[in-house]
Structures are given as structure tokens and as C-alpha cells.
Length: 454
RNA sequence: GUGGGUAUAGUGCAGUUGGUUAACGCGCCAGGUUGUGGCCCUGGAGAACGUCGGUUCAAGUCCGACUACUCACCCCA
Image 1 (spheres, rainbow, N blue to C red):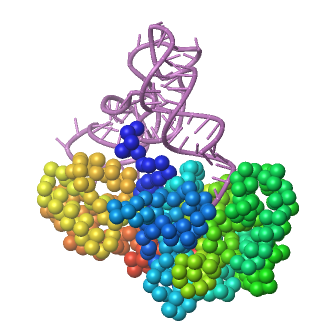
Image 2: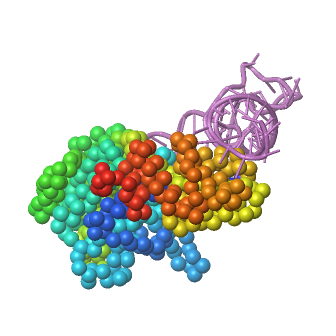
Image 3: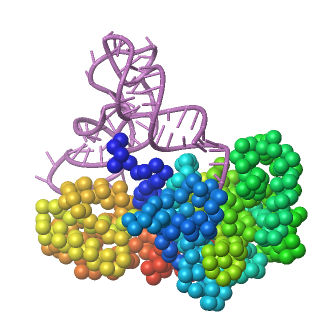
């Protein structure tokens, strides 16, 4: 296929039908986060390359070989964001939000870009929902964020294991690092080549290595949790007991070492077994050093990033029922040989749309039969056909496409009548709560006792 | 970046040991007496068989390279 008719590698179109599922995930995540007080923040798609270099970490894979970096016309080096935290932190500093009441809590749904080899659940442009909470050093800040993630994941019925760890603060990690280095240095021969390099640059990463020999070696390595300073230890205990108190199950996994440099103390990830190798559906943690590293005042913070495509995959595989794509409430057909009928249909549809109905008519001017066929394919709830006869009598027959039942309706009271017809049909078709919810959003409550979802 | 698998209409696929006009389901369009969907019937459009090169009288079928997709590694969401 020609290049110009193919989306670039690692990118994907979301066609109507799919896009509404992604949108549903983002909507649920976003609305849930807003009940926690996370306000939406929008930051640029690209930032100065240096922001990611300093923020995410110059030795990380993400920055070293996965960024989309380019010079603009005035020679500035810019990069498409590979994640969302750095940009949010930059905005936090730039606008002096450290002067505002703490915590400052943000949520966002964004595209991120990483030049990686695409595979299932990993694209080069991917979508992430994330939250950041700036200004609290207390463990309740991260448990709040974890609870939020857990709630969102749970909403979609996704089975996911929460794994947590503490990687300590600058002080205790330094000690641990030295101990780790000492341990692995004694076994250099058994390490894979990349890990030999990591020994100097970032020995923590060796713990993450999937190479069998490294893995085996790592199993016997010193554990970070034994090196935590008193403060970090107490903090981690606080996190765990709060999670217990909230009834959130977790596994402590001392092998979790996040690949982004800014993390301190608590790190966590939600891993779903239904996804295979790319099972991390959400990852995050505390990053107390980031704001200061970027030139702001010392500011404790934490947050998470959630992969929307992975959430979608996991939700589908977990049997979550997404809202059905919108189908027309009313489809108005017309006699294509009668210009007056066509105009009348167009005006009727326009009037229905005034009242926020999904109303449609044929813009191909096809035969009545073809129009009805189209309406049927679109899943229209009701149809009506306008021709000379209807214009003359002022009355049109409205057909329920599900039952085939026809109801005569006066053209001049079409809108009001259709209102009732739709309500009746919704009730009699044992509609799902979701459809009812949709109607409720338009201020139409068709259920006897109108309580919320669930 | 490393390794495995795959590559035929919009989509899902068939194409026997290389041999004429590349088959079928779904989808799309149009009809089935002139103003009504779904089911059924009929007809139609739509494929330089991923790309380039090679072997051969002959290649969708064999070989090579490239590209894309996919799975795993690495890393991450």
C-alpha cells in the first residue's frame, strides 16, 4: 500500500465504534479523578528536550533512545512528551503553584510518544490518563492516588494485582546502591552485557533484568527494604497500613524498580494478567526530588500514569460491557422526488436536534427503500417517511423499528410526541441502566425511582 | 536494538506437487413493478496476490532482500 495511505508505524486510528470505548475509559477515569479534587491540566505536546533529560533522567532508556526529538526552525531542541509528569511539574513551577494551597492536584488525558518497537499494548503514540499531586510528603497522598487508580481499574472489572515497593530516599538509596554494587561486582561474570554496564550507571536496574542468570542472581541480592532509613521505613509502613485500612490488596515486591529516575520512596504498579508481557496497566509512585531538580522549591509529590490502550484491552478481555455506539433516536425519510418533502424532513430533523435528539435523514437522496435500509443499519429506534400525502394531511406514521409498530403523529407536534414514544420504548425494551443514564443526562428520567448508576 | 511467525478485494479467508478469466462468506451498491428496514432471491462494483529483485517456457505458489503487522526479549503505560 502506498505510504501516504498508511498510518505511520506504531500509530493507530480509532474509528467510531472503537474511539467511543477509549473515550469511555478516559471519561470514567477523568470523572472519577475529579471527585477526588484533581483538576484538569493541559500542557504542551512538546517541551524543551532538557526538561525530560533532567526530569525523567538522562540515563533512562526512555530519554536515551526513545524520544522523538527535533530542532525547530530557530534551533531549539524540542521533544514530544514521552510521559506526562515532567510537563505537569514544569507547569507547577512556572506558574508558582507552590504558593497556592497544598496539595495541588492535577489530572490529564494525553498522547505520549516513545520510539519503541510496537507490539500489542504498546504503540509509539499512546494515550495516557494520569494524575499528579504536588505538595504533600505524607503517605496518605500516595495512598489516595493508589486508591483512585484501584477504583478506576475496578470500575472496568479489570483483574489487576497491585505491587508496591519503596526505593527509599536519596540517602538510604545511596547506601543500598553501594551494597548492591558490591554484591553484583562479586558476580560480574554471571551478568549479561547490559547489566555489566548498569553496574556503574544504575545497579538498581539489574534487579529488573529478565535475563535468567541475572534474575537468579538478583534473587539473592540485598533487598532495598532492609536498607531503608527510619523515616522511609515508617513512611512505607504508613502506606501499607493505610492500604490495609482501605481494604486494598497489594503485594510487596522488592524487585520493582521504575525506569524513570524521578521516583523516590513508594513505587507501585497495577499488573493485569490478561495482558501478557505488557501487563502494566498503571504505574506510579512518589517523586519528591523532581520539582527541585527542575529548579523549583523542594516539593514532595506523587502520581500515576495509566495506559488507555492497555486499559481498553484489559477491559475487553475482562468482559466489561461498553456503552453501545450511538444510534439515531429518529430517522426521517422522505420522497426523493418531492423537494417539499425533502425540505420538510430536513426541518423536522433540525427541530429534533434542537432538543438534543440524535435525529438523522438521508443526505444521498436515495430511494425510500434505500433510506429505510440505511436507517435499519444505523440502528434507528424510530423512523418516519414524509411525502406528498403527509404534507397534505399533516400527519405522519412513526414506526418503531424494534417492534414494527406504527403510530400516527401530527407533524406539528412531532417533537413532543416522539419524546413520549422513545420513553415508552425504552421502558418496554428493558433498557440497560446505561441507556437510561444517557437519557437522564438530557434531563429525561424514565425510571420510576430515579437513583444513580449501579 | 535482538529473535520467531505472518503478508491474497473494505474485512475474514480458499487457492492442491509452480500451468489459462484468483474462489467464497461478510460488508458495500442496485434491483425483486414504480413511497418503507431486518429475512430471502438476483445482479454489480471492488485485488497490479505487501514491495523490489531472482529461478523458470511459466510464480499468488520456489529463493533472496526490504517493508509492514504480530508474538517474545529489552523497556515501559
